[in-house]
Image (cartoon, rainbow, N blue to C red):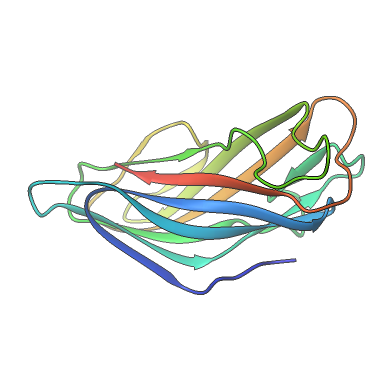
Length: 168
């Protein structure tokens, strides 16, 4: 199931971030809601603009030990990031836990994020915590979220987590 909240726009002087939230009706699927957020303004008319184009979805693996947007037919969250100069870096924070989950849903769970970019800045699938320097202009970004159950498996139910796409 893919949850869409429509197209969002963020223009900020300075740093910017997008919140990506994963939501699920069962352990088999989870979707990303993308919520823009401004971190801090800059003094000198520089900007990083984030436009959210599509929310994504996460799918469970065969053993129900993983929820991931990298598992077919999962889909990444998509955003366009435009910068005024080449002094910005992009990264993706992983969530510390689910904000909504069935009882025990946050026990023994490890999150990871990955992202890729195409446009004026091109980079392959990279860990979310690696900072990628952006060139001046538009970069199309795909954001992936994965949750692994270290012991046991995910129970059926609703899951929601927040991921931050950072441009700073």
